[in-house]
Image (cartoon, rainbow over all chains, first blue to last red):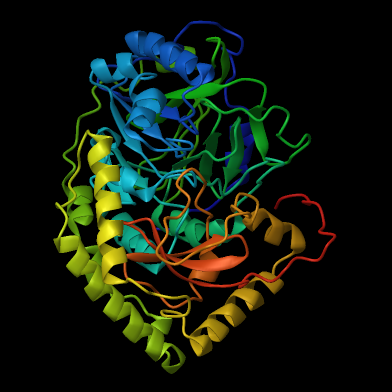
Length: 296
Length: 215
């Protein structure tokens, strides 16, 4: 399978609906029956006020959106990793979610001890990199801190064997970023992007940059950076970056995603409950004629 | 695969595509079950220049396994104390096994030279702003010492994949990391500094270029 970027993709991406921008306290996802819903958090483990407030806001959204799991794109625990740190920087901020049965699937960030993989609430199955399936989505969770041969080989085998409609990957370091502090991880991009393109990756989530950015689709792949769920690096998105489709570096954020068959819906919400980005896009089915889908 | 992207308003999606069916996770689970140890990647360790290093690695893994067998097995747990306690217990056992270990025991002088050359060549081939970016979160003020913990409150420096692919592949018990300008060999499960190559990363010129526009 090969993926071809088309001018249509960029044109359509530019037009992703932002109709709910500025709407407070409202879930704007379609909430389709039997869809797969999840939240996205990144760079969370500070144990400070912002993390707790995001946790509360996320729970408010869960009550309406009823998502069942959360993906964490790394930097799950900053600083020391004593038992009380796991409590203050993870278990307490997200207690209402954990109590409601929401499962967390963590990726490792550069501030995380790789032994976090043995911490059961992170559901890493004792692995630095792993995969899991929810609904019609295969998730590939990578350790971008240490992308060695072993991991790349595993990843390619996992992609090859993936049969779900959607393929989504997440890890800590963004392949494309307008961040002034870190920016795009081009080394990582060199080894991952060819696999993404070859095996039809649909969506990629990352953190590391302490802000929110939706990158213009690159080679047909959607990239989201959601690294401001506790940390925040104000004013860090380079102004005028050609990569940015939508960005916010003024407030802490989280994402809620709903995948209903071939439609990916997303809503990005600030610490204050304001929707700062939202939209939807559709993928074509892998099998079939490849006939372009008509615009609705 | 070709994506056909369709922009639709959230209002109109609410009634679309009901009945998305839950799918079993068999395929990915099977992949997860693969034994990473069995992966036989092409490995510069087969390079005759690294034969001695390869022997040292094998000996270390044996020692690691001996130490590992003396501490309770590490399984997933909701109690982080068990995770950190296990890490410490393993590190203590390895310290006992490697009492008196010194710098250069794994990276002998010729191996250190070869590896330092690879690191230097890799860094020198990168623009200054990229060199700077690689080291941006590397703890710079902690000198490495054999058989000590990697500083637990500090970030683990990310080693660029492009460089990792040039270095001899390590067994899963060990990894390369930067600590300051030193390249360290770190025991992953024990969080222990096993050896290091001093000043493997070339010193950046006093004036480094600022970060340019990102590609």
